Image (cartoon, rainbow, N blue to C red; front, side):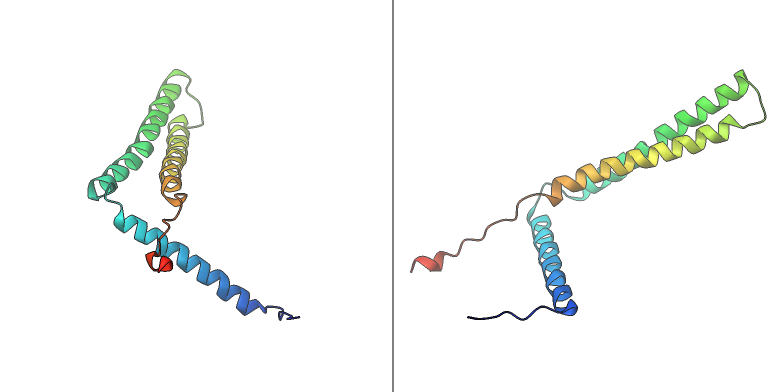
Length: 119
């Protein structure tokens, strides 16, 4: 009866690190082999993130200006609209980047077949 030694903290950490390195290496290899995402995909993603922040920011700013002109008061609705638009835009950009990242991160790893097993 073989008894396994309890693993110490550094051994557990080493195993977790090894698994993480293997996962990242496999992801890097998949990305290298994937020809769908090139330079233009990156530029498109960059533009999408920019517009995802810019449009809500401008809309919030315009809404704030309209409120300030319609109902003047001590609070600056222009600044609040600007801040709200930036926050909404950043959340929007984060959402789209996470959505695109999750498409790549959860692809099943490729199974390499060993043809020498049959001989």
